[in-house]
Length: 82
Image (cartoon, rainbow, N blue to C red; front, side):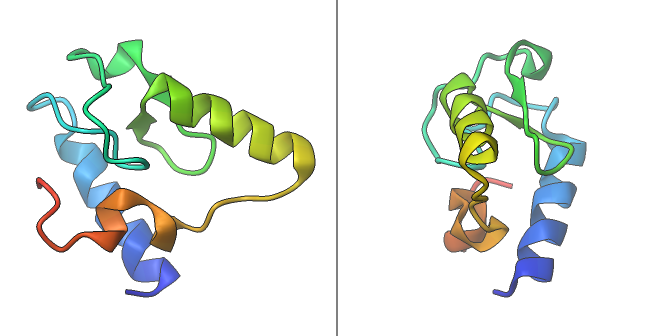
């Protein structure tokens, strides 16, 4: 999966994120609050991530590095819950 395909998969997921309690699309951990709006909004793309991933994104911004979408759990696993 390339970066654009990973981005598209994340955006498709974002449209369904309010339907269920899903794992964090970035790390894959089941740390998300059932109400997506109570989680961190990603700084990279319009999707909610767990609070820890939100903090990591802020730290990445501080040092000028960004994790590519292809490294997100949702992009790495074919059977990711969608």
